[in-house]
Amino acid sequence: MAIETSDVPPVVYDVKTEKMKTYAGSVGPLDDLRLGDGARLDAILTQRSTLDAAVKKGYPLRAVDNVVAFYEPLAVATDKGDPELKAKLGTIIDEMHKDGTLTKLSTKWYGVDYSTVK
Image (cartoon, rainbow, N blue to C red):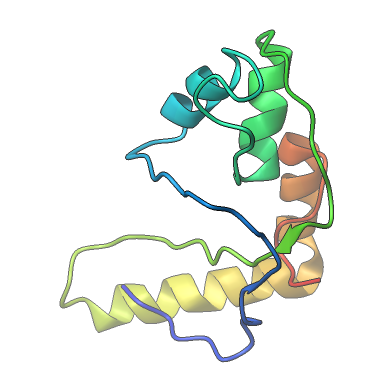
């Protein structure tokens, strides 16, 4: 299922680096970074909830806010070919936006409202 959206802001970044490294998952860069500043990495870009979870597990990391602003649209995956299910899920998600349910759930589980673009 794909629900197209037109209200996603562009990715904006002002990061100066000589070398960038990519990883297949979110744990690898955290493990490399906790080896110490400059051992393998100087910094990472990651979702705030991923960083917060690592800090709770004892990773000696800290957030540097307002360096990169991005919006990560999340999705619900379904089998192809079921327009009725797609429409129903779209209606449910729209209603959850309107009545504040998505905001409440995001705040409860992540401590911040990820359901809206800021």
